[in-house]
Image (cartoon, rainbow, N blue to C red; front, side):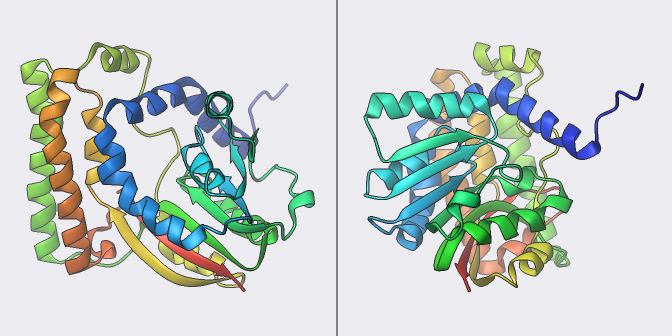
Length: 303
């Protein structure tokens, strides 16, 4: 008897298993350093709240994780449905819902492709897609865009926050900037912490369990494919680069002991400022490399 799984089914099972095993640690990491939210999330948050907020309207939060964004919109008067494939993340979201006493938000553990959306056709004013699509196999990207389009009202808005990649050639200046940046990150996040014994016991234990910062199949979304798949259903009003080095830097800082993290906080602010400067000067696509995660915000309007 052939016991091999269908490749797509195996893909999804791999991703789900990773999130169920390490999702709680990912949530824990964000709680360690408040500046992660202040520096990394707040400017981005202001951008998508301005774009998506419609008090009294309905919002779908895809890849909701532990629900931090869902609660943000629910507390400002929107009715919110959060969906995530990871059971551990949905459990965390439901626990937060009880502790915060927020009633106009609900959560479902589901694979979005398989999710029965028939009762939600044209139901949502806004959709937020939070680092969800880059976990999908390429063959399912178009299906996902079409399904999102089916649940959004005409004129409704979608904000994608996803790592993107582009085929634009890199200039020599960019290569030099990359080389210097890579050396700095290697020293700050790998060499110095190992030499000085700064890695936390919790992170060491997670590494022993097999933890890696990325899940088995995640990779950046090709911006050309995204434009192609969105073109029939949506107007693309903006694609904006947000995080080149700063998000990865800040997440890796959470691996350090508490006493060391406070000294890295100013460096996290520096890397975020550098990201903003480089994107304004050169554009995010100039820094694209195969496999590099450049977190971008994409604004869509349903035709």
